[in-house]
Image (cartoon, rainbow, N blue to C red; front, side, top):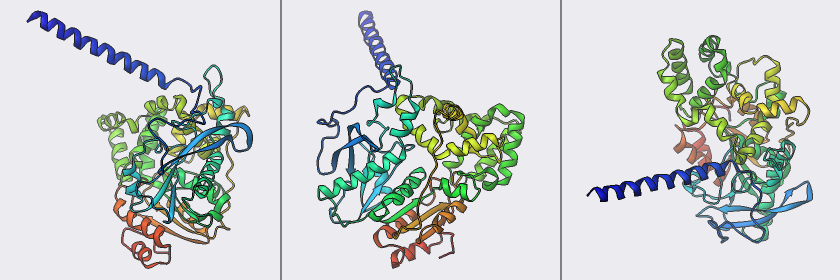
Length: 445
């Protein structure tokens, strides 16, 4: 019996050691910089090419055809039907939603019954570029800002559209539709600005517009005073007590609100509790991965996260430089913690090694229809910028929803609204009926 027990313990100990070695190797590999990429005559083993999984050859740099080539991909929705109107579901460098095995339930939930296309994102696994890393493993920021830029991503998306035409998936005359939320909503605006002749309709959901914000003397992301003045007062009191905690606290509050349907109430309760010396709720929230700045910084230090920071810098870089010069006023949660995350970009911009992106987006000439969807309790983007954005397009409406950034309370309603818009447009009965439901607060037609 003792001998059997010893053998069992040895087996268990061996299993623990093997598991530990495997975990160490797996974690260590995450910090390895890529040295190769998929060969042009190969495919990813988990995604063999078929009618729904397509590959295409693209230039590493669309501005320099001699830069070499790489293999990109796109995936058609499970119920994709040739002949249907097609939605390009765009994601930008901040969203790691599209890989070789995407979660179709997520996309089907947003676009039920529609034929859509998922376009890969350069710089996100598995499409990493060895070119953006130096031999010592450090990041070449100038190359990263070029090769992982949204301008390159727009060209990739257009190349996918052209590939679909060549393969007969859509006709040469057929216009596509676009779906873009948050940062991808800005990417959709960028695509329309350059290739609007290929687009019939677009939904820009819980999104902003860096160029319009600047032109209207507004912050790119929503200032805390605009979000809720009572929350601002409690926040400033908390920072007055512990000024060094501004980045950690702002990150926690921002994500708490971003993932809530009643953000102002939750933030006020959290801050009042903190200011009264009751820290249990704060630390309980801090332990959640999505609210922990230290964990976020660790994950963004991985080589595979460079594209996330590139897009982040594109969107907020110019704003951050102004925010720092203005003494961090007016208080902006996104800017507060972005300084900590993008510190390397800021310092390199100060020395002139890199620059912040200047957006030049043309909207007035677009003849298609646009639906702008904003949340009145969105911590990220103010409904005011949604209103301005909608006014820039000739054929548009703005839907104002009583909800936060992730629209958690309005998912069923938005399914109907999106589908009615994509299937019929702004003037058809189904859309007008959905637009008029009580979930939608905007009375302007």
